[in-house]
Image (cartoon, rainbow, N blue to C red; front, side):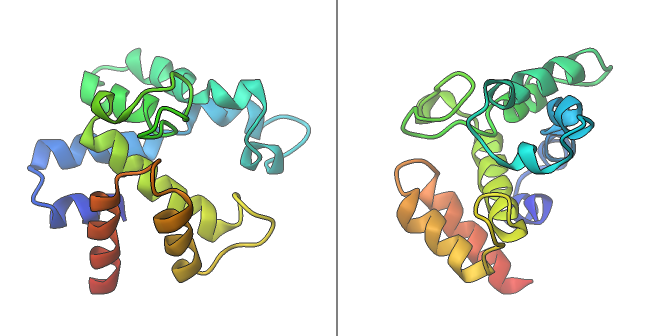
Length: 155
C-alpha cells in the first residue's frame, strides 16, 4: 500500500525504493518481543517501555547495513511519531517529520487497525479510515491521509 501510494503521489524511483526498505524493516526492532515466550500479542499493545523504543532499535539495526541512508533511517525512526508531538520514541512534531515518516505512519496505522492490533477486533477499512480522520486528526498528516483514501479507492 505504501509503495503504491508513493508512486501515485509521483515520488521518484529512489524515494520509492527507500520507502520500500523503510516499510519492510520498520518493525525490525520488535524481533525480540515477537520471539519472546509471551508470543506475538504483546507486540500489538502499546504502552510498554520496550515497545516504545523499537523504532530506534529498528533504525540502529538498519544503520549497520550497507545502503541504509538517512531517509530510510528517519522514516523508520519516525513511524510512531505524531504531528502534535504525542508520538514516540522522540516526541517529534510535524516540521521535524519527513514525508516518508508521515507516509509510513499512515500505512502502519491502517494495517494495525485492520489487522486487529489497535483494538481487540480488526476494524473494517472504512472504520479504520474514519478513526484516522477524526480520532487522529491532529496526529497524522490529513492531506496525505486524503491521498491514501483516494489511492485505496483506485485499487
